[in-house]
Image (cartoon, rainbow over all chains, first blue to last red; front, side, top):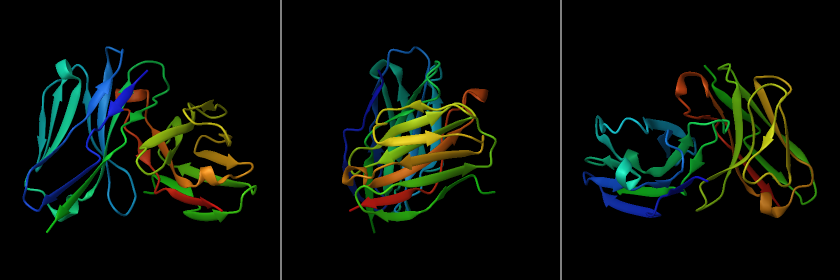
Length: 116
Length: 115
């Protein structure tokens, strides 16, 4: 069975602060994919990034960066110089690479509030 | 470029009433999913389909039925709505397993209230 834990229920920061969202996962599969999705106040769910279990190279995309550490089963997401538009619920998800019909398991989400 | 479209966006039902949520995708995806989102509980998989004519149960299937008569459409039905089914429902589709991508493309969500 798969499990994704986002221990931070809510985070509040002031604009321009850096913020890291934590994600810890459990799986018995040796090959899997990890994702981050964003849900802004408007309600839609938007894919942000995918990482394969065999690729531990961290990634930076503008103000966003992701730190994947297989040894600690973590896939953390950092926003540098946060902006009000970053306010959203962020979900971490796990997808095992087996015949499970592409079923992703989601964490409960972290609500990020960026205050001006 | 519609992507994934859900109808209706909002609905209020009385206990015991039935209704169907329609999901349509124009990306030729084989795999489609229905999730429900409740406060503090993330997204939970209700039912899914790996292709036209197939359906399977997810994590929380009780009280729901689904059908995938056409590849582009995935219907979620509530036969006898209960207050516990008050939630926001999201349909999603995926390129999985082709291309080893797996990210989900979501509809805008359907907010259902059962009184």
